[in-house]
Length: 389
Image 1 (tube, rainbow, N blue to C red):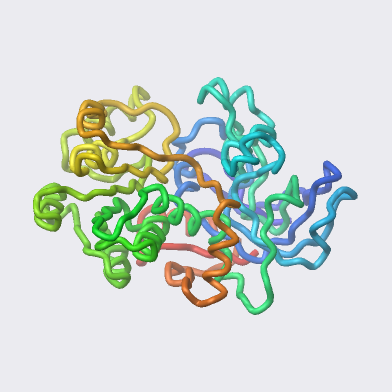
Image 2 (cartoon, rainbow, N blue to C red):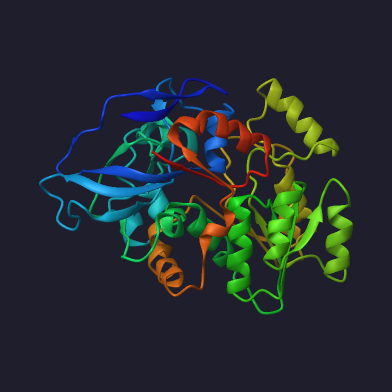
């Protein structure tokens, strides 16, 4: 089969690799009908996440048709259309029973490595590092899906692939980020990052009743898309984020702040961001936390910081005194996808949510390597790439 394969930083290739097979009686094989390039994939592409190996198949946002099932699979049938959440879940451990699916205790094949890095294991993830299990990803013609009766979400007839594809990651990620804010009717919600996850944070915050949503970015196409959703747009290259947020909120600051950027913040003019890039270049710091610092500083006392943006290791110079003294709450984590899919699928079915508005580029799998670069460099108005194997 054909797949997008990682061979090192900035080296993704479309190659022929062996087809996956049933390895466990609880497995299923999915023929991929649509997959996407996620912002989290760029952390791998750019070489910022540890634990990658040459030859790893990328991709954690995918869906398709069931073509084979193991003998212990009872809920899926050959021919079913499914969206596959990026988190691999067993459905039986203590964390899964609590709905904390992204920290499933059983699905990470390299749990010891994760525990060494994070203190405890996390769930296995598709197409990510060997710290999260080293599972082959979904930017491929076929994918092996373990625990197939638990994770995959069946797609009802009448919905297109593009309408439901993002249920596997970025739509529930944006939704969870907004839910974590405990949004109240008078709240101003500020979202850093107007990429695909940021767009769904905006959509979710508005659906959950925020008084107003503000988005911070510097890419005109992304800011225009956010403004089209009713958000107030701040271009951090053209105006002071702190001053503008003060004007919008009457000097109080936003009650809720969402970091939809993560470890590769692209601010370049502030002293802290320059310092981050220098430390990262000499491997004294793994992540660039400019957005975290800014949120901690501007958030209104008693507010909530929600962090769906991915961080991989160590951050430096966080103003934690501001967090403690202003009584701020921080909520974060990889997305507990299966906690949200039922509600979100119903909203899509009713027409309340149309996730397709973020798609700007559609192509075949063979175009994937070049589109990784287009997406990373924010060229050609690229906001979201969908690939058809």
